[in-house]
Length: 149
Image 1 (cartoon, helix red, strand yellow):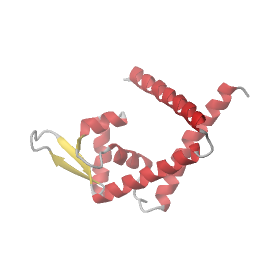
Image 2 (cartoon, one colour):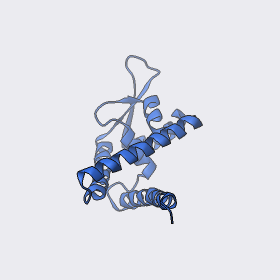
Image 3 (cartoon, helix red, strand yellow):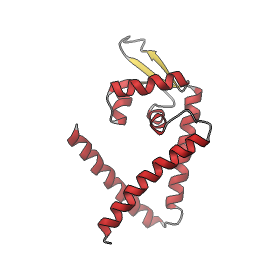
């Protein structure tokens, strides 16, 4: 098997495994009522200040309508608050509740443990090469996304 085939297989399996493990971790933890998608929406909402729906939707590469559906569910579950801007009543701002901040912290810890596991046996030079490769991959995905928009 060549490098291209091997990398393709590893990347596809890696993506699936991350999603599966995140979902299983959610079901076993304190946030059983959340999906992986819910958690990624929570992650996109700033833990310190309110954001408008358009900003969050852009960061997730979804439409405002799609985000509204997710936010409606998160408001009902008690993870997100929705308020109208005092300066422009047409603008809806969203922020995390205490429960939402707890979920955000849990998710952040999950990702920190994942990253530590990846770099634990790498020396500094290998870490830099890995970072460069993943940054290049991210740029590729962004360019692909821009072409689809």
